Image (cartoon, rainbow, N blue to C red):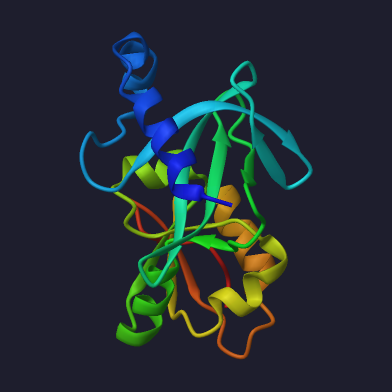
Length: 176
């Protein structure tokens, strides 16, 4: 399946002047990585493009600078779905960087917040894989208490669970 043409259609749609006022409150960056909007229909964990469907943000999930999947985040309720089901996380390179450099990983609740932050950090797409994805990450900055609780529940049994923080306040969000 050709993901780039689909992403480019969403990119062109997002640049339609008629959508500018609707997209302005999200504070998405005008430049930088390609992102777009489009109509979708979600079925289970996957979505299909559907021009008359629900409006959604569309971003690419990359691995080593190669697009491996597309991710849709429905605007009305922020439900997340993937196009192919091959991506487990947005911002995979940030996971590797956090492990390698011992830095705090910025973790976002959804792709809208991640995109508004310049795609600096990660978004979990497959929560079943959280222990493997976050193993070896020393610290995580979560954008909400609900996200911190969910990450804590799924990582607390790791040999070295990450220290969780809320940001921008950066207060600890879990007990050792």
